[in-house]
Amino acid sequence: MSVAHPAEVLLGAQAGAVALPVCDHYSGVEARMRKSLALQAEMAAEFGACVFDVTLDCEDGAPVGGEAEHAALVTELALAAAPDMRVAARVHPVDHAAFQADVATIAGGAGHRLCHLMVPKVESVADVQAAVAAVDAAGAAALPLHVLIESPLAVRNAFDIAAHPRVQSLSFGLMDFVSAHGGAIPADGMGVQGQFSHPLVVRAKLEIASAAHAHGKVPSHCVVTEFGDAQAMRTAARRAANEFGYTRMWSIHPGQIRPILEAFAPGEEQIHMATKIIAAAAQAEWAPVSFDGTLHDRASYRHFWQVLARAHATGRALPAEAQAWFTPGGTGSTH
Image 1 (cartoon, rainbow, N blue to C red):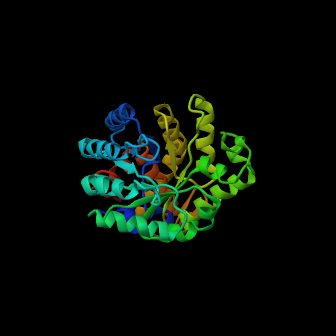
Image 2: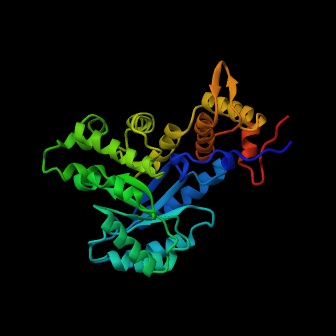
Image 3: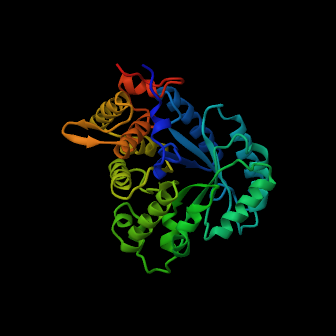
């Protein structure tokens, strides 16, 4: 008989309130922005889903004095992207002279096409409120905001920032965070090893992840600048996902996208276990079940459903029974 869809039954998990691709790829130079959008479409065809966001960057991408022209270019590229692709834009900070014009141009011209707007150097809820006011004034009141936490003060305010209803994700800005300490954190704190060992950096990462999860938002891990070291990238992505509670990560080079997808994707054994447990739960009409000598109920069902959702979002092959839950109209069935 037909049963309810797991996503309808397994509500109430804060961490599952917002679902985003696990990779957010940044580019700001025109040629790289165009290549990023082309790669996004190619990989969507390969995986059968849009597996990473492309964020078109104004903060670091716009030449000084050319901010208006760059914002216009970002708007043009966002509007020209393939319909099912997830495209975002990063504007200048709220206290930058170009911020209002960025938002008016990009959110005003392409707000309906963007998946979100990234606001850097957010220090407080007041900064979020200023961004919301500007975005709403541009006519994009439905546009979610992602924010960058990049200073000790911002880390202190992370829980309040995450609580704002328009904030969908919190990202850690490693480079600016280290620089904001006036030399108290050595330069290797920005490296692939130091960022996972220096106490102040580790504390900031954990605070941001905790704040995001506390309010059902998505914590997004910082960049790895050593983009030529594929193994370092994989190690960093795995640690971010498995030890620090992050469910999303930045890419700044096309070569980083696949390692991020791999690191944040569940393994085959996890996928098959989750499928069996959710199928058994559905057959039991979501009452508790015993699986391999372990009792499971809705509290653990939520976890295993999130495993399957992550597998689908990262383009992993799913057993037929699980794939049915991600097919339009699919609910699975008991037998």
